[in-house]
Length: 382
Image (cartoon, helix red, strand yellow):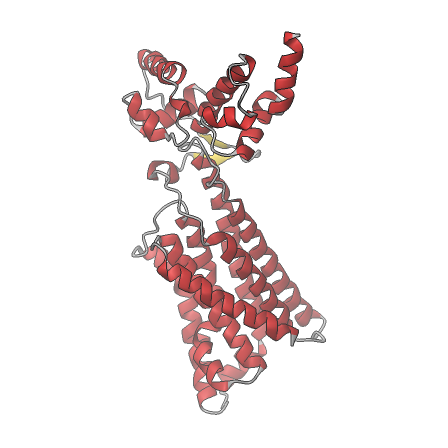
């Protein structure tokens, strides 16, 4: 009874989520998410049908459920990538990711369905397939796990790249997406562990599919709550496709040294322009400032400006802008000109969008919390 409640709750939740996604603005990430939810929906319905021996549902859903891991793996991978860039689905190297699923349909799903329609008449080929069923499931689980690990690696890199283009990351940190991928990794580890136990020791005292179905439902609740309202974050292709960008051992984005593209006079000129727009025009007060906005102000391409900031200022666009915001905040609270403002009120006036981000950046840059810094300044004046 308990398992039925969890299953039905998961199925109903997915239906509502799919309806919401269907009516939502059709971003590519939403389309991938809708497809993922549909596959999981069919999987849960199939499991429910098997538990209650609803044969017509088993036959209808069996076409997708058999080898679903081969379909979900690239879907989750491309969903993660689509949060940052547009995926060209017509490319052969994109389509190739789904070949294992098609192969599974031809070699396993269709023969099984034909056998079911003929009242379970089993050929020698299907007898062999069923004899290695757990081994095939482990292979599918490892395949899924590899894709999720690749997606996790891409997410980490792209999160760092975002700092090269945006000055505020309050809605762009994708921490929920990282947690989702960690949940999926744990899910597959459980899959592999259960199957390995069955292969090496023997059957469990219960149907392991119950655990997997409950885990699927819980992941759906989490993904549904956080993923529905996440918009894609545009990152220019020259940053996404830059093969020279790598993550070092401290997960910091670095760029391999390349030939100097600026003359000495250009370096001085760009530094002077940056000083003008940041220190005098105070462009950093714009809480939606992007790399493209800053590049436009100093009459340079955003690609060149990104290279300049990385190579000649030894920082990222995100860190550069927030350095000036922190400096502006420090000046304002030490001047006593904002006595009627809270600390966060002053910070928001200096270009910060998120209170949490402001506190984190301030502590990292100054070594104190904003309140501790304010108290220290008060003691100095006394």
